[in-house]
Image (tube, rainbow, N blue to C red):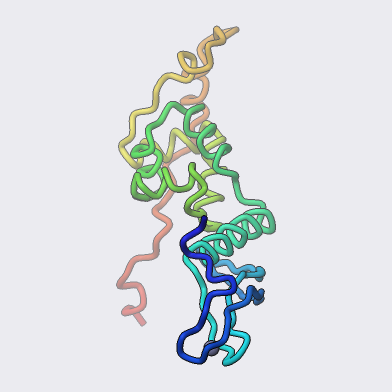
Length: 184
Ligand SMILES: [Zn+2]
């Protein structure tokens, strides 16, 4: 049924037939790498090699899952749950992560893209309310009231007032001045 299967397909150039084979390849994604087995077709007579789109995609998916597991990166569902628990759109979450495009955030949530380790650490840091509020203020993103999202009535006072009272002084900018090297 698959149009792209080359199994036992005639190689007109030499008269041989393609047979299924497997190769081990290293696939790099988001600055990380994994070794996976990738299916291919090899001509039994001349050794010509062919790889279908399906074979490439299957190997990339396997690599993505292996890298996510080895680096213990957030799963697509966890990213979506994190975003929804804060009450942000994909656009707003991207803005909190220094301008990650909406399509990339959606790709993470659908498992099509893999966040790199820095993005994963940033995502996790947003679970901390004080960090979240500081980053939202810097990015100019208005956060919904957490009491309205949780569905659980707040007990014993106003948590948002308490959080802002504990808010530390603004951090200095993390980036060094670009002309710092010139002063020597
Ligand atoms: Zn051949």
